[in-house]
Amino acid sequence: MKTKLHYITSLLLILLIAGLSLANMETVKVSYLLGYFKLPLIILILVSVLLGAIIANLIGMGKQFAIKAELKQAQKELENQKRVSAEQAKQDLESIN
Image (cartoon, rainbow, N blue to C red; front, side, top):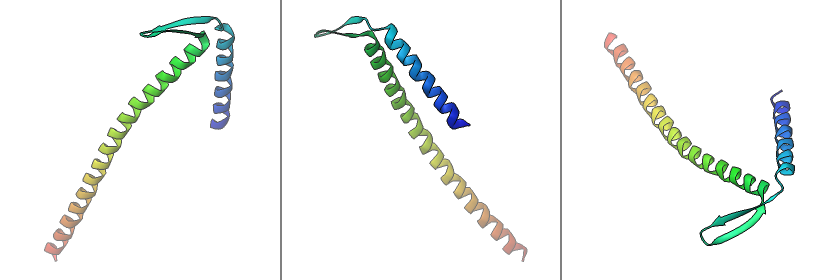
């Protein structure tokens, strides 16, 4: 079911992009510090979206690495607590006997 939903979403996205392409074929002038260039509006839109997605992924990767490091530290602390608890239980049993 999830795969079918993925394919339907992909198809709708492709149709949306095709519709945008047809609606935005006029050429626009893009100016920057050293000059300018002309290109179709849809190319400018797609490049902007792509750059935004790349930047968002890079920011997300930084957060993901931080979360993974925090998880690793928490797992080490949990293992230490388990070891200490096991040693404590062993000592308690020995003191009872």
